[in-house]
Amino acid sequence: MLNEHAAQGSAAAGQARGGGAITRDEVAHLARLSRLALREDELDHLATQLDDIISAVARVQEVAAEDIPPTSHALPLTNVFRTDDVRPSLTPDQALSGAPAAEEQRFKVPRILDEEA
Image (cartoon, rainbow, N blue to C red; front, side):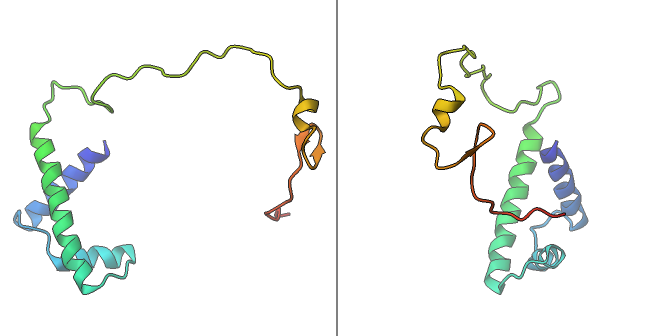
């Protein structure tokens, strides 16, 4: 879904510009909108990178066929978790026996954040 919106947005931007490469002025404008301070050399570098990204998205958009369902992975995934079998384990008292401090069957740790009233 995000890629679809990105591709549509980049295609619309490309059409608005006449289909040319992203200019450093456009990168500077995006940087201002994003409140990013970019050096002159970064503007040129990012213009090239953004143009490459938009070109890659456009190529994927050309290949994507409507009869192919979208997937999150190239290969089907199976559940890799083990079954939840009950096994013998420590009692709460045993688990807390080596703790420096315990309270209400829990490890007691120093407060690091103040609670707001």
